[in-house]
Structure formats: C-alpha cells, structure tokens
Image (tube, rainbow, N blue to C red; front, side, top):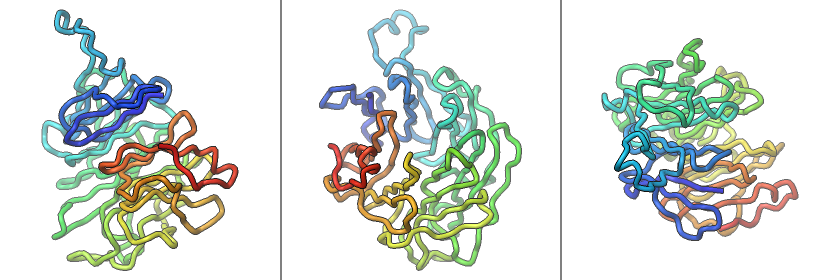
Length: 326
C-alpha cells in the first residue's frame, strides 16, 4: 500500500508501505489527488486552480532527467480552465471507479480524459459541458460514464447560488437539474457526491456550511445529506440525527452503508437504518476533509491538520465499529 494526499501549503505527501514517516513527491500547494488502486506510484496531484501533474513512478527522481528531459518523472497535464482562471482554488478531480482511465476535472467546464496516468498534456482533455458564465465546479463524480457536477457562482455570500449538472462523459445528455427552491435542498456549497456503482441514478450529495439563513435563499433548518434514486428528479433528506456541522465527503461503502466526513468527525449509517453514529473512537475531534476507500479494504480519512487515518471496513461486517487504526 502507498498512501498519498494533498497538504495545501505543503505539497503532496506520500507514505510507502511499512514506512512510518511520510515524504513529499510534489512541491508547492497540494490539493485534490487521484491514486491508482492497482499501482500506488501512479498519482495525479493538483497544485491549485486545476493545475494537475501526473507521475507513474511516485515522482522518484534518479537524476537522469537533468541529462535527458525525455526522462521526466512528472508531467503537467492541466485542463485549459487552469490558464483562464476558471476554476476554484481547490478544484475537484476524480476517476471513474469502473474505468480508472476515465478522469473528470471541474472548473467552469467539465473536462474528461480517457488516458488515465498515461496523459501527457492539457490538450488531451475534452470539454464535456460548460457550467455557465461565473459558475465553477465544487464537486464531481462519475460512474460508468454518468457524471454529476456540483457548482457555485457567485460563490460568496451575497448572491450565492448553486446547482448540479448531469450528463455523460461523451458530452451527450447534459442538463442542469431543476433543484427545489422551497428549501428541500439547501442553498449551500455542494461538497461531495457518492454515486452508486450499481445504479448511477442512485446518488448521495453532501452540503457544506451550517443550517443557517444565507443573505438570500433557503438554508435554515435544512440538513446536510440528501439522496436521490431517480438521477436528481426528486430528493430526500437523510441527515436524520446528524449534528448541524458542515459535511465534506460522503461515501457508499461496500456493505451498502454510508460514511460521512464532517467538520466534527466521521459518521456511519448502517444498511437498512436511518440513524448515524460516530465511526470509531480514536480519530481526533477534527475536520474530516475527505473519505476514500482503499484496495486494502480500509476507509481512509484525510483530516485538517491531524494527518490521515484508516478504519478497517471488515469490522462493519461483524457489527463492530468502535475502533480505528492509526
């Protein structure tokens, strides 16, 4: 196992198997990251504003690149939105779990590429959809060619608006969802999607922020996690007994349960239930920025300032979820 993660002001971290101290394989800021579950040395790391770099050898530098530029260890593969400033400071990127060579990157446009870690330049991305003037992606997800892209614009408090666009990686079928304006869905920042790998019409969406009134629009008294089973035509609030704190990352687990990263902790909802409870007992009380499942059967939680933690999902099958691994 090789574990990588972006550290914002401190580049990209990498932890080799059996090591105790993380190293760094990319400099500058470290943002969203994609790692190949089959080969942990295949890594895509975002700098900022969708400036993506890719390596296929863990960015290991043996010095040969200095004599031969053709032996570079990392390649800049940023989509065109990077050069036009049409992306969030931390912009979303992801890979299709059913096709690791298909990646989605979100700025003003929804970008798609099908070369995986073999991509070598920004021109190899295809513009699948334009989210619209002043709109920038905040979260993207794809399964089997279906894409969900959450956006905001303006993204500041005054005049804030958000939306969700849905379409295909081949550029067909794109449309904006008709999101309710009656408060069914909060008028808040869309932070994460979880798309069911067995049914792309089944989606969970997590909203950031607190359930308070914005300068305008609905938001007060509305939850943080919502579910659709018809591709976004209708939604239901599945927040239940979650605390009113920002939700950052939602995952559908292999056992059918749900995991949620929030500004307070990681939470778990067991299959067939509606209530949530804290997942594990050793994870520090801190913001969980991102949750991802690893090929080793563990759930990884990237925190704000407290490192990366893992939880063995096999414990869920035995009804045990009161411990975490450091």
